Length: 142
Length: 109
Image 1: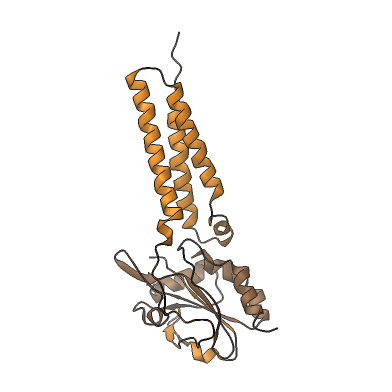
Image 2 (image 1 turned 180 degrees about the horizontal axis):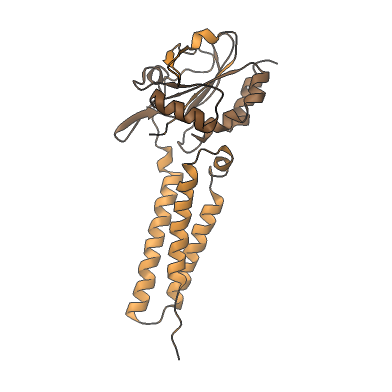
């Protein structure tokens, strides 16, 4: 009987790596609509989960030889490592932020500043008195 | 940086409240000119490469070899008083634009 190719371990790993790659490709885009759905990236996590299931199926279906079992298991371990690193980034590492304990509190006067806009013109916060101001600090495109 | 486009999409509503928007970043002026053009922003991006203002607001984030601003949004009233802020505890998460617009709307009952 001809041995059928066991694709599950490979497809499983590709799903895992693909999901993580797709997340970072999307999160670096400036589209606001996309980001709303990346706060908790359920679709990416679902694909990642399906990939892990395939990794398990791959081990179960592998031929009972050291070589076949070993390859399936190694690919599964790699997939678990990718999933683990991604989950750590999403749910732990991204909380590592400085305290900002002295950031202006609600009810305090916003510190004045004068900084150049994109054309080099100085913009002073105090010059906008009389209007509400939305002040947005962001991480940048470095 | 998706928060830039997010606020731009709400500019009509923010204009109804006569609100101004200012973005602040460590990036140089030339980079900010590219971003304003690319995203079609109708509000300015201010350059703070020395982190003077970022430090005044205690938002410095030493991230690897570079110091940047942590993401933060403030709504300041006509008298210059902070009336709402979001400092986010996760660098992946930002306030949604409609939340910011609601905070501005709350200034004028």
